[in-house]
Length: 96
Image 1 (cartoon, rainbow, N blue to C red):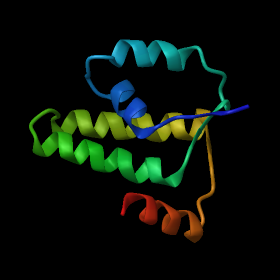
Image 2: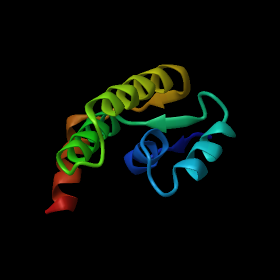
Image 3: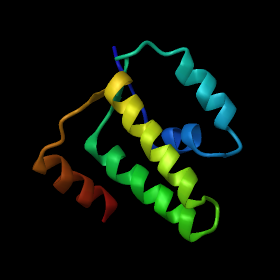
Image 4: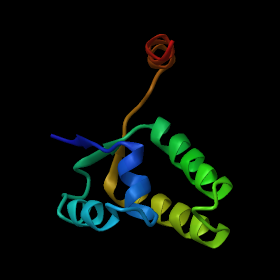
């Protein structure tokens, strides 16, 4: 069974936040391939880092390092779930 990892968990793991150490410890104890993300997480992760830059919480070099680490762990550790058009429409209805 895979655990779905939300964007907020990855942002905390790869940037300096209050719970960064806790999230990194949790992730270190997970089995490679036992974690899943969706393409939404890829988009949301980049958006979250951009927001941190605009708000002054993150510098450009830290953003580059976080994106690099995210790409690496996505390739090495995450199963990327497929999302179809129907999923986007349902999500839009939930958001409305």
